[in-house]
Image (tube, rainbow, N blue to C red; front, side, top):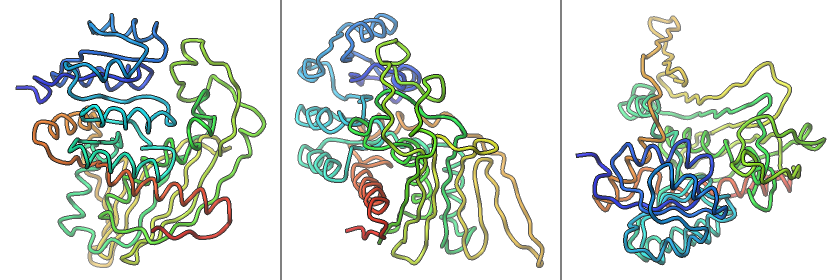
Length: 354
């Protein structure tokens, strides 16, 4: 039996990520998509017709009133995560919410507390943990192949890849590449390192290209731009963010992310180093020293469908009534890290994590 069989799921947000990833994967896993809501009714109607969804609305609150919606997938701009997720939890729905969790740590804490109060599942779309190569590397680390892990580096650099629309407007997105793509690599690397407590962070941001204007033909585009509904060229977020996290066990995690920089080419990946070896992905490689000589071993592990595996986890958690791998509490920790990094960038000082 398919893991989603018997589950009735509603979608709040019918934009690009819902259409490209979440709707196809929910359907592939056997779930019944019973309702869809989007602020742009025509978009909701179009997607509803494509997927044979009977209830379509431009008011997510109407969707949450329905008895034939057990769980919801929230794919809306970041500034709407908190109000939508809180409403869904209060309506006794389990929730899968896109990243980043919220605009700040306070909102993430309120969402996590409400999920605990209501006994509901709140899971975030941090799908990098669900890649096959990520899981293989995690297993190697847990089996002690790298020894004691004391260093991590997360990198996601694009030469030109700044999305337009709400992504580039701070009041709606909360920030630029740090919140958009940095959240993925920081979360992945921190998880690979064992999720140790983060003691403090230091960060900085740069804007050398976006400050001069924004082109709408580069990078990911939200649905409003694709549908010709948004031509706002506001760009008041960073191009680049970098810094480090100090961890309670003495380890350090370095990171750098950007949407736009005059690089030779795009680059992304994670690297972790331990007392007995190091490893990176993609591709998944392990670095050891044997008989005094450096040895590199490349493991033949594919990426897989991380989006689908994340949705599988959500459905399994609903059926088993357990907390997901990317839990609400991890969402709080990630937002504490990201919020503190922006504060550090503003003040030029290292910030403690409470």
